[in-house]
Length: 192
Image (tube, one colour):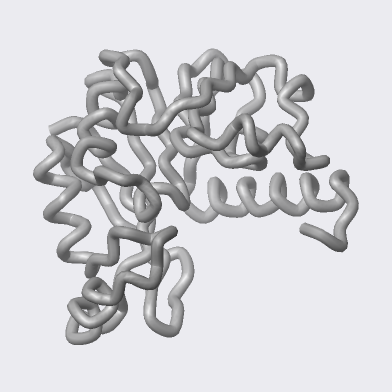
């Protein structure tokens, strides 16, 4: 981001989110209620035109200094600074997006429960995870305290167990990007 102008960066991020939605066959109808959980300064909220979006992130205040974070540009988005674990809403959202986030939360099980509670009974949650590609290496990486930004390092099967324990049913999972040590997966979830 440091060498790109804000307009170029935002265009690149919007194109990325549109690509992700196309790849996953996601269509959010106008008028839908949406939660962008862990929105970051340029989250999927950018491309959800016509939806009533709530964008939650504990670092919103820090993003204010970034030239590409301009909340006033997104009139249909309500930004709220809070940790995902502090979200207390019941059956509010048609769609919940938690992309590039769950590996960073302090209490993953509580965060997953909060996502489930916020989702309407017939709603859909999209959750991405960075899953260890080699289960034999996962215990080694999990034991190393060096990755403060990613306190949760699980295999795909372990993530599936966490998600189901939180009360979700997994409709499908899709590999979006294979990696060296971690694969980038997205789950399509419903309330169990």
